[in-house]
Image 1 (cartoon, rainbow, N blue to C red):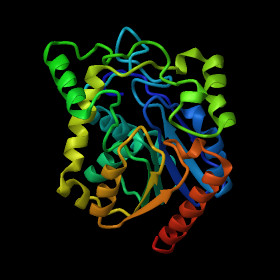
Image 2 (image 1 turned 90 degrees about the vertical axis):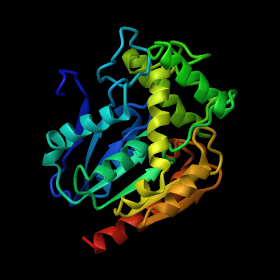
Image 3 (image 1 turned 30 degrees about the vertical axis):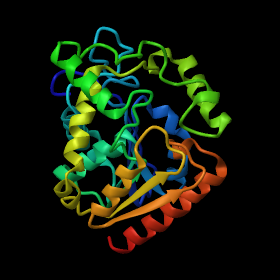
Length: 292
């Protein structure tokens, strides 16, 4: 990148691909977690591009303690994507579609708002527009974060956080009901421990709060004119569903799809939930392609 930071990306470009899907992962996620999804997109005749965000996966970890998930500003993610989309991703055939998970959905909205590239549409899966901060009430979490950053502790783990993996045992995980798919996370980290990450820093959380506040303003959503399929998971305990509903209502060409019995990571969910997602996805893309 512009500052010398190495950022890891991957692309697949099968012969005869009719379009490209660019995947924007969520916080803590890495390229390999999307292996099954990438295969399904390739089978649909797409090229695929995906990135490990700065601070996770095998991209640069900004701090000496590489297990800390840290960023100075979400604008840094957007600036990294600008370089990538005008570099290696520029070779991917158009039209382009964004497929975004959680934090990736948040960054995807920033990218669409700034019109960094031309996208036919976007699928925003449980976009991170509000964070559930239990056991701390949200006002307390916000106060602790702003106070800690003001006191020079932006590089410190959030209260109660630490270097231990952010991926919980299956019995307590907030991402999926599917034990087999969830187990892939630990198999991949076992093969390459550097894929793992610990808790976020106060700096990361402060940057997230500032960016979510900006997106919550009405004009931010109305400025995004791209068609968007926004998904909401009924059992989500990671992000705030009311914020997702509000955003979908503000998008001029947004459509909300609700998925019963789904936790936060719909692409790691059970076959039944994933089948319902792909049905919505395929219908959305078919409608997009008729207008391209």
